Structure formats: C-alpha cells, structure tokens
Image 1: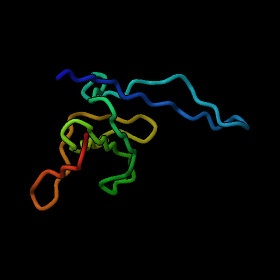
Image 2: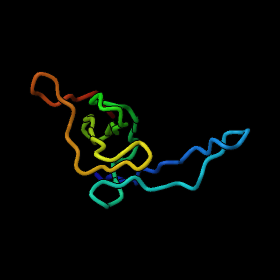
Image 3: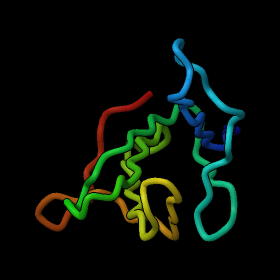
Length: 98
C-alpha cells in the first residue's frame, strides 16, 4: 500500500477588500518544516487550550487519529512545534476511516 502525503496550506484572508480576497498560500510549519499529513486530512483551527491563541487540529485519514498542534506564537504569527494525539481518559481517540 502506498500513502500520499500532503503539505498543509494556509490562505490568509485580506480584510481590506469589499469582496473576500485571499493572499498567496503559506505552508504551515512545525519545527520550521512544512507540516505534512496523509491524504484526506481535515485541519481545523481552534483555541483548544483556552489561552486566546488559535491551535491546529488535524484529522488523519490513515489511522483515524487527530493531531493537536499547540500554538506557542500568536494568532498573527503562529508557531507550531510537535504534535500530540488527542486523548480521552488516557487513550488515543481513534475515529473510523477508510
């Protein structure tokens, strides 16, 4: 079996325009390296830890796990390092996939 890995891109919204306009895509990075995930990834930006800074959740098609990247930067300049898998009661949450 072969897996396809993709780079996660962010398209900044330019708020100065009357019509929603997006700037050129930016590669989301973790530890200074473009963040790659398996195909059919499902990213979601949310303040997971309640610190007022948006974090990144990425659902993985392969394995059905959910990666959590805590943002140690700001909303305007996010900084992601490593990820952890979401857990409940000490067990990694796994969703159906395939």
